[in-house]
Length: 241
Image (cartoon, rainbow, N blue to C red; front, side, top):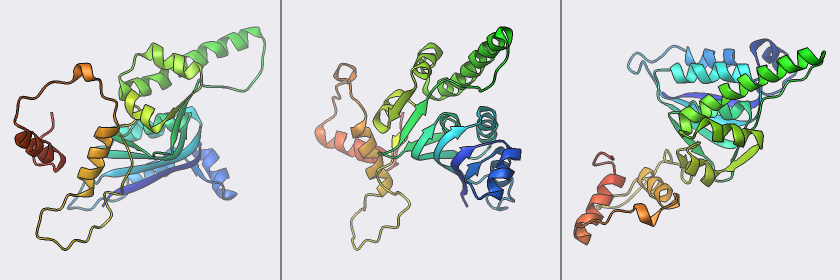
């Protein structure tokens, strides 16, 4: 059975989460995530899949880092569903997914870390170096997922970049755009082969990705063979390279 984790509301540390819970304010914390990950597993399925649903404006960067690390360390396959906004610290958590799906109407927002305090000029100078280090740590998560150069990512963070669904896929922040519910039951009355929703979804995402004509390789197969080959890939009857 798939374990469900919701990253909704503010991302906070465990002590602050107790405050939020007392007042009925939605939050996500490392302790809450750990409790779900550590739930007793089915003996017949010791490493169930994990599904993380994200709609959050972000929050505590260190709490997000802890959640990100737990998800990355999990032996399960982690699927992240960006349902609304995955901003700031929540975008870091999103990068922990082995597969990241984003709603067509969702957004990812990345920006530099911030702190709120005071002190003398030496204190403030030190704070700048701390924030620089935190920004690099955040960029590490983006780089691991996207493969983009860290310098480019730091520049995007400095400009507070908002990323829509298509751009998220193009830049590697997400793997696919959610079009159809692949888990929805399909009832059929036919003797012919029925195309599963997963294949339809895969095709939509392939068509939705940007294609560079210069990189296309001409296929010498006859049209009928090429058609069968493509259908085999979509239906999962052959391994994709």
